[in-house]
Image (cartoon, rainbow, N blue to C red; front, top):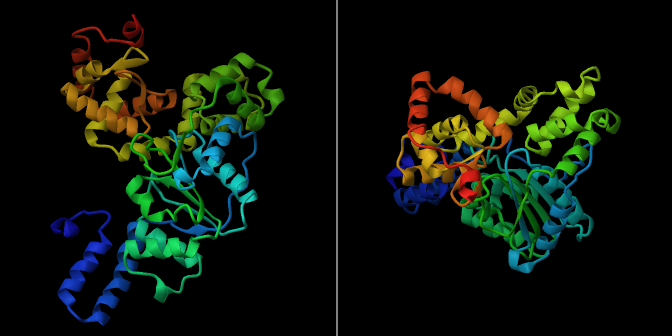
Length: 401
C-alpha cells in the first residue's frame, strides 16, 4: 500500500486511495463521497493527461487507397466470432496504418450494424506528451457520453465497468479504442460480447492486450506501396520513374504513414526529380514529418538500457544480428540482452526476424542512428565497437548455412 503514495508515481490507484479513505473515515459517508469526487477530478482526469475525450463519429477515410483489403477482411471475420468477445485487436509497428484500418473496419461494422451507439476514444498509449489514459477516467467519459447522470457514475473502476456493460448490453454498440498501451488499460473498458463490437489498436504487439481476435498489421507489400504513392502524389508523377519510386518505398520500410508523408512532398514539389529522393532525404522528411515523434514515444516506454541498446544496434554491419552480437555491443550478459531485446520488440522498435535474430526497420535505424550521435559519447561508441570486433558477428546469412 505504501507504493500508493510513492513520490513521482505517475498514475495513482484511485480505488486503493478510496479504500484508505473509507478505512480512516469510518461511517462518515459524506466525507467518503467528498473524497470520491475530489479523487475523480484531481487524480482521474489529471492522470490521463490532455486530450482524453469520447466522440461519436468515425473519422472519414483519408485520401488515397486503403490497400489493406486482405487484412480488413480478416479483421471483419474475427469481429463476428463470439469466442473473441466480438473484439478485434489490430497490432503493428508505428506507421503501419493501424488507426486508418481501424476506422475502415469500424465503418464496415457500423454499416451493417443495428444503429447502436458509436464510441471512439484515444487511449494515448504512445502519446508523445501524455501518459496512457487512466481506465477510471475513460470509463467516466464513456458513461457521460451514454447519458449516465453524474450521481449514478460509480467512484471505482470496477463499478464503472459494470455500469458500462449494463448500459451497452444488447445495444449493438461499436467501441473503438485507439492506441492502447496494454491489457490492463483495455480490460476494464471492454463492454462484453452482448454489447456489440469493439476494435482496439496497439503498437505493443507481443505484450499487447490479450483480448479478442488479433490481427497483425504489417507494412505494405511493394505493389501496394506504389499504389499508396500514386494515390497521394499522382500516378503520372510516380510513373515517370518506377525504379526511384520503388527505392522510396524501400527507404520508408513500406510503412503507409511514411509513404503518405513522402507522397505529399512529391506532390508539393513537382520540380523535384524522383531520383533526388535519396534514402537520407526520405528519412529526414518522414522523421521530421511526425514519425520521429512516434519512435521517440515508443522509446520512452522502455528502460534506459534498452534505449542504449537500440542506438548501439545501428553499429552492426549486417541487417540482422543475434543475441551474442547485441550482448557484445551493450556489454551485458546474454540473458540480460535477451530481456532488453524483448522490451524493444514489445515496443515495436526492433523486429524479431527469426530464431535468435533481430533487426531494425529502415526508418527506426535512421532514427536510432541520429540518437546515437546525440546521446552516446564517442568513447562509449568506440568501446562498443571494440567489443563487437573481438569475434565475428553471426548474420542472417551465416545462420542459414
